[in-house]
Length: 106
Image (cartoon, rainbow, N blue to C red; front, side):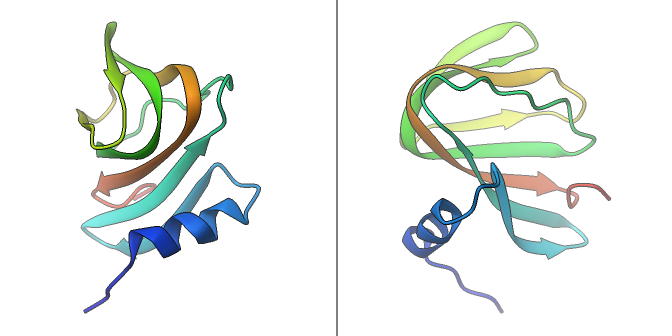
């Protein structure tokens, strides 16, 4: 078993210059924190894995395959594997839990 506190994961990710900080990897999934500053452009490309985003802080829009939706703390977004997607109109610094299944890069 592994246990995590979201507040501590977010605090740890803020000390890094990386946009993405992975905190769990097993063969069936990986999890991390994705951070984008307000006004920043999201340059991510489609992934080979299904993804779930759970917004912890911030406000933005996410565009998935041409469909745009506003997101805020508490928003949960599913993005299927290989779907074109990115965050845009980031009006408040964005911090998002990201779940990849299977593990990203596998």
